[in-house]
Image (cartoon, rainbow, N blue to C red; front, side, top):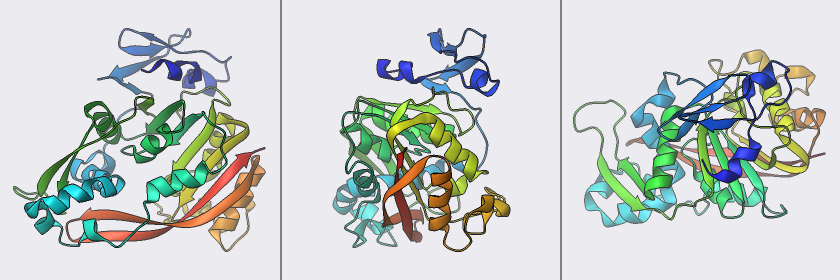
Length: 316
């Protein structure tokens, strides 16, 4: 783990138990606190929550995330590879989209942010926002509950290479994986990835100057608790980026917690207004907002272009 991360850490179990803040130290292949709580380090990745089975641990699904996050960097290699270009049935890599969602998101967040800064990419997936933040930050921590996504992000970082299959089919069968493309990548040195969810985050209060939450809040069970976590991890003047297509699903978020429906006593109607109201309730004010286009691939014959609401908030 890079040294700059260590001062940001504290035991998440002790924090939940209401005990005094307890720092974490590295002992052998685990993080430990003085209360004897231990968290494994698996192949260089700290595990603050347990691996969960499901779609986010599926290699084909995660491959789609790599394609979507690094599409602009992969495109030149696809254009040069006749087999890969042939497998791009939807022309995903030829979309006339001049915007780069991840770069635009970080630019919106950092528009007036003092530098350098400590940053948290919460729900980082395979790490594109973490990488974009790293160009201006002193240290970036990328966090996601998916072990496979964090392993993928870490591999891209350590190998300085993006390895991806283009033209992957939805169903898994021999020959369905498409054409493999490898793209050299100028990876930063000031990013650390770890596995945790919003209830096991191992960070002290006020640890971060900047937090990026890209398309995460509508995947949480309790959006208000998520916002309370953002408040705990920031300090006066911190900047927080929250983006969402408001794609609520009952498997992720109980319907009573959907913003726009009157959840938590917020305004009914536009979920953007409900989000701003709930953020204000927990000590944030809206600085600026924008709709960003976000292209994601699903498989070789389907992609989605989202209109994602993005808001930048200041901690008061």
